[in-house]
Length: 129
Image (cartoon, rainbow, N blue to C red; front, side, top):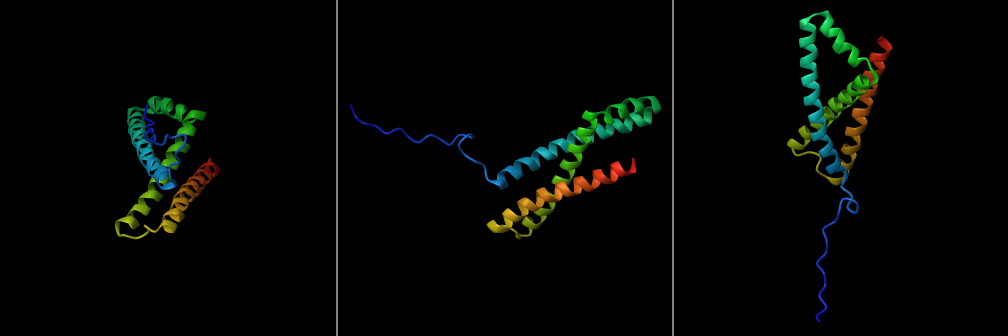
């Protein structure tokens, strides 16, 4: 018998750790999907408002529940995350920010910016109510 060596196996997701830039890129696309769903719900909200106070109240009663507020929180984070990452892409489009140190810094800056903007928005919204 010959002693054959097995070819190496491809790294599995449990073994291979995606770089932060890849996770941010995937999250950017997921945030875009959340924004699309939110835009559809916003149109439904406008249709309910145009239909009359009864229809609007039904829609509003769902938004004021815990799951409605959780969706609005996720939607606002997705909006700000998409905004911050889009600004980063504008800099990439002009050729700035491809150095590894800059990419690592802007990864953290995108996340921090989205968290801070979401927190400010919700603080203002909750303080006004």
